[in-house]
Amino acid sequence: MTKIFKKRRSMLYIPGNNPAMIQQGGVYGADSILLDLEDAVALNQKDAARILVRNMINVIDFYDSEVCVRVNHLSTPFGLADLEAIVPLQPSAIRYPKTESGEEVAELLKIIEQIEDRHGLPHTKMTLHAMIETAMGVQNVFDIASKFDRVDAITIGGQDLTADMNIVYTPDGAGIDFARKRIVMAAKASHIDVIDTVFPDVNDEDGLRRETEYAKRIGFTGKAVINPRQIEIIHDVYTPTDEEVRKAYRIVKEFKINSAAGIGVFAIDGKMIDAPIVTRAEYILRLANVTVG
Ligand SMILES: CC(=O)SCCNC(=O)CCNC(=O)[C@H](O)C(C)(C)COP(=O)(O)OP(=O)(O)OC[C@H]1O[C@@H](n2cnc3c(N)ncnc32)[C@H](O)[C@@H]1OP(=O)(O)O
Ligand SMILES: O=C([O-])CC(=O)C(=O)O
Ligand SMILES: [Mg+2]
Image 1: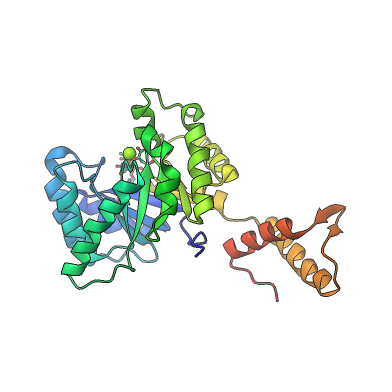
Image 2: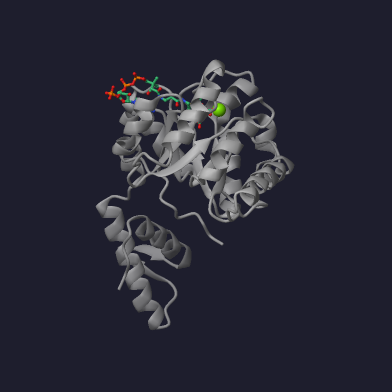
């Protein structure tokens, strides 16, 4: 099953203990909202955040945004309570932090499914996003990405990963470049979404654009966001330009005509067109919601 074309360019974190931000969360047009019970919430606010998210999630209008909840890790005193409170409400996805192995995902899914069984819920509606943000997670990422139908996205958490590696997070991303590429490859081999880490300086628009363009170039399908001001830049980077769409349309159209005439390879403006180039063009058209008649 190919699940990679879900529209998930931007995923906006909202601290789970901030009712005003949650209330407003849907108006910014993010593709996804990430209601956070984990690192945006102070230890002494964990219970309050869980109750707030539980009470607000199904009464607030988040418009067209997909709604996901980031829970705490099961090794903390909060993880199980988070799942018990949130799974019955069936957000679009649970984002699970610091995922380190396929065994851990299997254990997590077992707990989620037991909760769903108790509430008479199917095991098919809500998905799981595994965050890869430790060196061990990077080592085991293919198992995490490929073994479970319910894992429909993986993400890199650059802040935690650099902390785990005892290195400094730098805007050039040098320390996490290997991890980024390895995580992308695991996602591509598993045909799931792959979301880049947050860009922490909300005032540095050029830096955000540069990092997003790089992440897109190496294969990420979207990016986590900490502030509404970051959404527009990310959508701009991830939305094909008119020129790209026109070019892709021409490639697919001429490919159809040529294939009908038994021709598999031809040239447009001197550049060779064959099957993989058509596949890339079709991807652009799908992102732009354009069909070739
Ligand atoms: C490493 C990690 O785990 S990252 C994920 C966890 N971190 C988070 O969730 C952080 C979320 N972001 C934030 O808390 C804030 O954006 C900060 C602290 C980064 C910056 O705060 P500020 O400089 O005060 O933001 P700013 O001045 O741009 O806020 C403007 C408006 O946007 C709102 N806003 C800011 N961030 C968010 C957000 N993430 N979600 C929804 N609304 C937001 C503010 O409430 C404010 O609304 P108002 O004008 O109605 O009062
Ligand atoms: O990038 C994210 O999604 C935020 C995060 O948890 C991290 O960087 O550790
Ligand atoms: Mg993290």
